[in-house]
Image 1 (cartoon, rainbow, N blue to C red):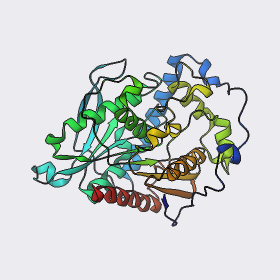
Image 2: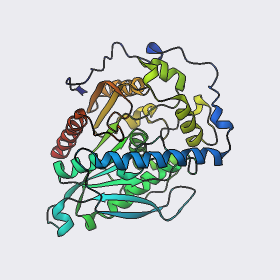
Image 3: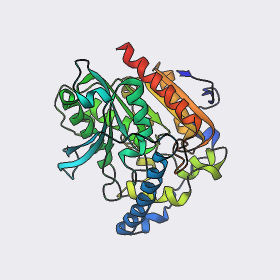
Length: 363
Protein backbone atom coordinates (compact mmCIF):
# COMPACT_ATOMS: atom_id res chain seq x y z
CA UNK A 1 0.00 0.00 0.00
CA UNK A 2 1.29 3.44 -0.87
CA UNK A 3 0.08 6.69 0.63
CA UNK A 4 0.98 10.13 -0.67
CA UNK A 5 1.82 12.72 1.96
CA UNK A 6 0.81 16.05 0.46
CA UNK A 7 -2.58 17.12 1.87
CA UNK A 8 -3.01 13.60 3.23
CA UNK A 9 -2.59 11.53 6.36
CA UNK A 10 -1.01 8.09 6.46
CA UNK A 11 -2.92 4.97 7.41
CA UNK A 12 -1.38 3.73 10.65
CA UNK A 13 -2.01 0.00 10.84
CA UNK A 14 -0.61 -0.11 14.38
CA UNK A 15 -3.31 2.27 15.58
CA UNK A 16 -6.27 1.09 13.54
CA UNK A 17 -7.01 -2.57 14.18
CA UNK A 18 -10.76 -2.22 14.63
CA UNK A 19 -13.27 0.55 14.40
CA UNK A 20 -14.10 -0.33 18.00
CA UNK A 21 -10.64 0.94 19.00
CA UNK A 22 -11.33 4.46 17.75
CA UNK A 23 -15.03 4.84 18.35
CA UNK A 24 -17.55 3.96 21.04
CA UNK A 25 -18.24 0.29 21.76
CA UNK A 26 -20.71 -1.47 19.47
CA UNK A 27 -24.34 -0.99 20.36
CA UNK A 28 -26.09 -4.05 21.69
CA UNK A 29 -29.40 -3.00 20.17
CA UNK A 30 -29.96 -1.75 16.64
CA UNK A 31 -30.54 1.94 16.21
CA UNK A 32 -34.23 2.60 15.73
CA UNK A 33 -34.41 4.68 12.57
CA UNK A 34 -37.46 6.98 12.80
CA UNK A 35 -37.57 7.28 9.00
CA UNK A 36 -38.45 3.58 8.75
CA UNK A 37 -41.84 4.42 10.23
CA UNK A 38 -42.62 6.76 7.33
CA UNK A 39 -44.66 5.44 4.38
CA UNK A 40 -42.63 4.80 1.23
CA UNK A 41 -44.44 7.55 -0.66
CA UNK A 42 -43.31 10.09 1.95
CA UNK A 43 -39.70 8.90 1.74
CA UNK A 44 -40.01 9.24 -2.03
CA UNK A 45 -41.35 12.79 -1.70
CA UNK A 46 -38.44 13.78 0.54
CA UNK A 47 -35.95 12.18 -1.85
CA UNK A 48 -37.55 13.94 -4.82
CA UNK A 49 -37.24 17.32 -3.11
CA UNK A 50 -33.56 16.66 -2.37
CA UNK A 51 -32.98 15.57 -5.98
CA UNK A 52 -34.46 18.80 -7.26
CA UNK A 53 -32.33 20.95 -4.95
CA UNK A 54 -29.20 18.94 -5.74
CA UNK A 55 -29.84 19.19 -9.47
CA UNK A 56 -30.06 22.96 -9.26
CA UNK A 57 -26.92 23.11 -7.13
CA UNK A 58 -24.89 20.94 -9.49
CA UNK A 59 -26.09 22.93 -12.48
CA UNK A 60 -24.80 26.10 -10.85
CA UNK A 61 -21.61 24.42 -9.66
CA UNK A 62 -20.77 22.93 -13.06
CA UNK A 63 -21.13 26.37 -14.61
CA UNK A 64 -18.96 28.18 -12.05
CA UNK A 65 -15.21 28.64 -12.24
CA UNK A 66 -14.07 26.88 -15.40
CA UNK A 67 -17.38 25.54 -16.81
CA UNK A 68 -17.58 21.82 -17.45
CA UNK A 69 -18.03 20.30 -20.88
CA UNK A 70 -21.41 18.62 -21.30
CA UNK A 71 -21.71 14.95 -22.29
CA UNK A 72 -21.43 14.16 -25.97
CA UNK A 73 -24.44 11.85 -25.88
CA UNK A 74 -26.56 9.57 -23.71
CA UNK A 75 -27.02 5.83 -24.23
CA UNK A 76 -29.86 3.71 -22.88
CA UNK A 77 -29.24 0.27 -21.42
CA UNK A 78 -31.42 -2.65 -20.37
CA UNK A 79 -32.12 -4.02 -16.91
CA UNK A 80 -31.55 -7.79 -16.95
CA UNK A 81 -30.44 -8.63 -13.39
CA UNK A 82 -32.93 -6.75 -11.22
CA UNK A 83 -36.36 -8.06 -10.38
CA UNK A 84 -37.59 -4.88 -12.11
CA UNK A 85 -36.27 -5.86 -15.54
CA UNK A 86 -36.96 -4.00 -18.75
CA UNK A 87 -35.64 -2.37 -21.89
CA UNK A 88 -33.83 0.96 -21.60
CA UNK A 89 -34.31 1.33 -17.85
CA UNK A 90 -30.75 2.59 -17.27
CA UNK A 91 -28.93 5.42 -19.01
CA UNK A 92 -25.34 6.58 -19.16
CA UNK A 93 -23.96 9.99 -20.08
CA UNK A 94 -21.02 9.68 -22.47
CA UNK A 95 -18.03 11.98 -22.89
CA UNK A 96 -15.92 11.35 -26.00
CA UNK A 97 -12.43 12.73 -26.66
CA UNK A 98 -12.65 15.47 -29.34
CA UNK A 99 -11.18 13.39 -32.17
CA UNK A 100 -13.48 10.40 -31.60
CA UNK A 101 -16.50 12.71 -31.65
CA UNK A 102 -15.50 13.71 -35.18
CA UNK A 103 -14.24 10.48 -36.72
CA UNK A 104 -13.15 7.09 -35.38
CA UNK A 105 -9.45 6.59 -34.71
CA UNK A 106 -7.55 3.36 -35.29
CA UNK A 107 -6.13 3.63 -31.78
CA UNK A 108 -8.20 1.91 -29.11
CA UNK A 109 -9.27 4.06 -26.17
CA UNK A 110 -9.39 3.32 -22.46
CA UNK A 111 -12.82 3.60 -20.86
CA UNK A 112 -13.88 4.84 -17.44
CA UNK A 113 -17.29 3.77 -16.16
CA UNK A 114 -18.34 6.07 -13.34
CA UNK A 115 -21.10 5.96 -10.72
CA UNK A 116 -22.36 9.15 -9.09
CA UNK A 117 -23.00 9.68 -5.38
CA UNK A 118 -26.10 10.80 -3.53
CA UNK A 119 -26.73 8.18 -0.86
CA UNK A 120 -28.51 5.88 -3.35
CA UNK A 121 -31.49 8.29 -3.29
CA UNK A 122 -30.41 11.24 -5.44
CA UNK A 123 -27.88 12.36 -8.03
CA UNK A 124 -27.25 11.89 -11.73
CA UNK A 125 -24.38 11.11 -14.05
CA UNK A 126 -23.59 14.73 -14.86
CA UNK A 127 -22.86 15.44 -11.18
CA UNK A 128 -19.34 14.19 -11.92
CA UNK A 129 -18.81 16.27 -15.04
CA UNK A 130 -15.56 17.77 -13.73
CA UNK A 131 -14.15 14.31 -13.09
CA UNK A 132 -15.25 13.19 -16.55
CA UNK A 133 -13.65 16.25 -18.17
CA UNK A 134 -10.32 15.51 -16.44
CA UNK A 135 -10.39 11.89 -17.58
CA UNK A 136 -11.12 12.83 -21.18
CA UNK A 137 -8.43 15.51 -21.33
CA UNK A 138 -5.74 13.63 -19.37
CA UNK A 139 -6.22 10.06 -20.60
CA UNK A 140 -8.08 10.46 -23.90
CA UNK A 141 -10.61 8.10 -22.35
CA UNK A 142 -14.22 7.52 -23.24
CA UNK A 143 -16.14 8.23 -20.04
CA UNK A 144 -19.53 6.82 -19.12
CA UNK A 145 -21.38 8.08 -16.05
CA UNK A 146 -24.25 5.76 -15.18
CA UNK A 147 -27.74 6.86 -14.15
CA UNK A 148 -28.77 3.85 -12.08
CA UNK A 149 -32.25 3.71 -10.58
CA UNK A 150 -32.64 5.24 -7.15
CA UNK A 151 -34.19 4.35 -3.80
CA UNK A 152 -36.71 4.43 -2.27
CA UNK A 153 -38.42 3.36 -5.50
CA UNK A 154 -35.58 0.94 -6.24
CA UNK A 155 -33.90 -0.17 -2.99
CA UNK A 156 -30.95 -2.53 -2.56
CA UNK A 157 -29.87 -4.49 -4.54
CA UNK A 158 -31.34 -2.87 -7.69
CA UNK A 159 -28.77 -0.01 -7.92
CA UNK A 160 -25.96 -2.58 -7.71
CA UNK A 161 -27.60 -4.70 -10.38
CA UNK A 162 -28.18 -1.67 -12.62
CA UNK A 163 -24.49 -0.76 -12.40
CA UNK A 164 -23.46 -4.34 -13.16
CA UNK A 165 -25.79 -4.38 -16.16
CA UNK A 166 -24.35 -1.05 -17.31
CA UNK A 167 -20.78 -2.34 -17.23
CA UNK A 168 -21.64 -5.46 -19.20
CA UNK A 169 -23.56 -3.56 -21.87
CA UNK A 170 -21.07 -0.72 -22.19
CA UNK A 171 -18.28 -3.24 -22.79
CA UNK A 172 -20.42 -4.78 -25.53
CA UNK A 173 -20.43 -1.34 -27.17
CA UNK A 174 -16.63 -1.40 -27.42
CA UNK A 175 -16.55 -1.33 -31.22
CA UNK A 176 -18.98 1.59 -31.37
CA UNK A 177 -16.75 3.69 -29.11
CA UNK A 178 -13.41 2.17 -30.13
CA UNK A 179 -12.72 0.97 -26.58
CA UNK A 180 -9.92 -1.34 -25.53
CA UNK A 181 -11.84 -3.82 -23.36
CA UNK A 182 -8.66 -4.61 -21.42
CA UNK A 183 -8.43 -0.98 -20.32
CA UNK A 184 -11.71 -0.46 -18.48
CA UNK A 185 -11.61 1.24 -15.06
CA UNK A 186 -14.48 1.79 -12.62
CA UNK A 187 -14.84 4.92 -10.52
CA UNK A 188 -17.40 6.21 -8.06
CA UNK A 189 -18.16 8.87 -5.49
CA UNK A 190 -19.71 8.09 -2.08
CA UNK A 191 -22.61 5.69 -2.82
CA UNK A 192 -21.17 5.42 -6.33
CA UNK A 193 -17.89 4.20 -4.85
CA UNK A 194 -19.76 1.39 -3.14
CA UNK A 195 -21.55 0.60 -6.40
CA UNK A 196 -18.26 0.49 -8.29
CA UNK A 197 -16.71 -2.14 -6.04
CA UNK A 198 -20.01 -3.99 -5.52
CA UNK A 199 -20.61 -4.29 -9.26
CA UNK A 200 -17.03 -5.56 -9.61
CA UNK A 201 -17.95 -8.26 -7.09
CA UNK A 202 -21.01 -9.23 -9.14
CA UNK A 203 -18.89 -9.53 -12.28
CA UNK A 204 -16.14 -11.45 -10.52
CA UNK A 205 -18.30 -14.01 -8.72
CA UNK A 206 -21.81 -13.88 -10.22
CA UNK A 207 -22.75 -17.36 -8.96
CA UNK A 208 -22.43 -16.13 -5.37
CA UNK A 209 -25.38 -13.80 -6.02
CA UNK A 210 -27.31 -16.15 -8.34
CA UNK A 211 -26.66 -14.05 -11.45
CA UNK A 212 -26.50 -15.72 -14.84
CA UNK A 213 -23.79 -13.77 -16.65
CA UNK A 214 -22.35 -15.44 -19.76
CA UNK A 215 -18.63 -15.97 -20.14
CA UNK A 216 -16.19 -14.44 -20.73
CA UNK A 217 -16.55 -12.14 -17.74
CA UNK A 218 -14.99 -8.69 -18.23
CA UNK A 219 -11.74 -7.85 -16.46
CA UNK A 220 -11.49 -4.48 -14.73
CA UNK A 221 -8.13 -2.68 -14.73
CA UNK A 222 -8.70 -0.85 -11.45
CA UNK A 223 -11.10 0.94 -9.10
CA UNK A 224 -11.07 4.64 -8.14
CA UNK A 225 -13.16 5.09 -5.01
CA UNK A 226 -13.92 8.50 -3.49
CA UNK A 227 -15.15 8.36 0.16
CA UNK A 228 -17.31 5.20 -0.22
CA UNK A 229 -19.43 3.54 2.50
CA UNK A 230 -17.96 0.06 2.88
CA UNK A 231 -19.52 -1.56 5.94
CA UNK A 232 -23.24 -1.32 6.79
CA UNK A 233 -22.85 -3.69 9.76
CA UNK A 234 -21.52 -0.72 11.75
CA UNK A 235 -24.02 1.54 13.46
CA UNK A 236 -24.34 5.11 12.17
CA UNK A 237 -24.02 6.46 15.71
CA UNK A 238 -20.82 4.51 16.12
CA UNK A 239 -19.42 5.73 12.80
CA UNK A 240 -20.32 9.34 13.54
CA UNK A 241 -18.70 9.32 16.97
CA UNK A 242 -15.58 7.62 15.64
CA UNK A 243 -14.97 10.81 13.69
CA UNK A 244 -12.81 13.52 15.29
CA UNK A 245 -15.53 16.11 14.66
CA UNK A 246 -18.93 14.35 14.68
CA UNK A 247 -20.65 17.68 14.15
CA UNK A 248 -19.05 17.94 10.73
CA UNK A 249 -20.40 14.62 9.47
CA UNK A 250 -23.62 14.18 7.49
CA UNK A 251 -26.69 15.06 9.60
CA UNK A 252 -28.69 12.22 11.11
CA UNK A 253 -31.88 13.34 9.34
CA UNK A 254 -30.21 12.73 5.98
CA UNK A 255 -28.57 9.44 6.91
CA UNK A 256 -31.86 8.20 8.39
CA UNK A 257 -33.58 8.96 5.08
CA UNK A 258 -30.82 7.22 3.13
CA UNK A 259 -30.85 4.10 5.29
CA UNK A 260 -34.64 3.75 5.37
CA UNK A 261 -34.87 4.29 1.61
CA UNK A 262 -32.07 1.96 0.51
CA UNK A 263 -32.45 -0.87 3.03
CA UNK A 264 -35.99 -2.03 2.34
CA UNK A 265 -37.31 -4.22 3.77
CA UNK A 266 -35.19 -3.24 6.79
CA UNK A 267 -32.16 -5.45 7.40
CA UNK A 268 -30.91 -5.92 10.99
CA UNK A 269 -27.46 -4.42 11.40
CA UNK A 270 -25.69 -7.70 12.10
CA UNK A 271 -27.19 -9.26 8.96
CA UNK A 272 -25.91 -6.60 6.55
CA UNK A 273 -23.03 -8.82 5.51
CA UNK A 274 -23.93 -9.22 1.82
CA UNK A 275 -20.71 -8.12 0.03
CA UNK A 276 -22.80 -6.10 -2.43
CA UNK A 277 -23.97 -4.02 0.53
CA UNK A 278 -20.83 -4.12 2.67
CA UNK A 279 -17.95 -4.72 0.24
CA UNK A 280 -15.43 -3.77 2.91
CA UNK A 281 -16.05 -7.10 4.64
CA UNK A 282 -16.02 -9.27 1.52
CA UNK A 283 -14.50 -12.76 1.93
CA UNK A 284 -10.72 -13.04 1.74
CA UNK A 285 -10.89 -15.01 -1.51
CA UNK A 286 -12.50 -11.98 -3.17
CA UNK A 287 -10.01 -9.57 -1.59
CA UNK A 288 -7.25 -11.61 -3.22
CA UNK A 289 -8.86 -11.08 -6.64
CA UNK A 290 -9.26 -7.31 -6.35
CA UNK A 291 -7.66 -5.14 -9.04
CA UNK A 292 -5.57 -2.07 -8.06
CA UNK A 293 -7.48 0.49 -6.01
CA UNK A 294 -7.12 4.24 -5.47
CA UNK A 295 -9.00 5.30 -2.33
CA UNK A 296 -9.68 8.93 -1.45
CA UNK A 297 -11.08 9.65 2.03
CA UNK A 298 -11.98 12.77 4.05
CA UNK A 299 -10.82 13.45 7.61
CA UNK A 300 -14.19 14.72 8.89
CA UNK A 301 -16.25 11.94 7.35
CA UNK A 302 -18.05 9.25 9.35
CA UNK A 303 -16.85 6.84 6.64
CA UNK A 304 -13.16 7.52 7.33
CA UNK A 305 -12.57 4.70 9.81
CA UNK A 306 -14.06 1.94 7.67
CA UNK A 307 -12.09 3.24 4.69
CA UNK A 308 -8.85 3.09 6.66
CA UNK A 309 -9.66 -0.40 7.89
CA UNK A 310 -10.35 -1.56 4.35
CA UNK A 311 -7.06 -0.08 3.17
CA UNK A 312 -5.22 -1.83 6.00
CA UNK A 313 -6.86 -5.13 5.12
CA UNK A 314 -5.83 -4.85 1.47
CA UNK A 315 -2.30 -3.92 2.48
CA UNK A 316 -2.07 -7.07 4.61
CA UNK A 317 -3.13 -9.06 1.55
CA UNK A 318 -0.39 -7.44 -0.52
CA UNK A 319 -2.82 -5.61 -2.80
CA UNK A 320 -1.96 -2.56 -4.90
CA UNK A 321 -3.74 0.30 -3.12
CA UNK A 322 -3.00 4.02 -2.86
CA UNK A 323 -4.73 6.06 -0.17
CA UNK A 324 -5.39 9.79 0.08
CA UNK A 325 -6.89 11.34 3.20
CA UNK A 326 -7.95 14.96 2.84
CA UNK A 327 -7.13 16.77 6.06
CA UNK A 328 -9.79 19.12 7.40
CA UNK A 329 -12.32 18.12 4.75
CA UNK A 330 -15.85 16.76 5.06
CA UNK A 331 -17.67 14.11 3.04
CA UNK A 332 -17.97 15.06 -0.65
CA UNK A 333 -15.38 17.80 -0.25
CA UNK A 334 -15.04 18.04 -4.03
CA UNK A 335 -18.64 19.05 -4.59
CA UNK A 336 -19.21 22.33 -2.68
CA UNK A 337 -22.34 23.32 -4.60
CA UNK A 338 -22.80 25.87 -6.04
CA UNK A 339 -19.38 27.39 -5.33
CA UNK A 340 -16.37 26.97 -7.59
CA UNK A 341 -14.30 23.87 -6.79
CA UNK A 342 -11.42 24.14 -4.35
CA UNK A 343 -7.87 24.00 -5.64
CA UNK A 344 -7.44 20.63 -3.92
CA UNK A 345 -10.06 19.12 -6.22
CA UNK A 346 -7.94 19.48 -9.36
CA UNK A 347 -4.91 18.25 -7.43
CA UNK A 348 -6.63 15.13 -6.06
CA UNK A 349 -8.28 14.34 -9.37
CA UNK A 350 -4.82 14.55 -10.92
CA UNK A 351 -3.43 12.10 -8.37
CA UNK A 352 -6.27 9.69 -9.13
CA UNK A 353 -5.72 10.00 -12.89
CA UNK A 354 -2.02 9.29 -12.38
CA UNK A 355 -2.96 6.06 -10.59
CA UNK A 356 -5.21 5.03 -13.49
CA UNK A 357 -2.46 5.80 -15.99
CA UNK A 358 -0.03 3.65 -14.01
CA UNK A 359 -2.47 0.73 -14.07
CA UNK A 360 -3.08 1.05 -17.79
CA UNK A 361 0.63 1.34 -18.56
CA UNK A 362 1.22 -1.89 -16.63
CA UNK A 363 -1.22 -3.90 -18.76
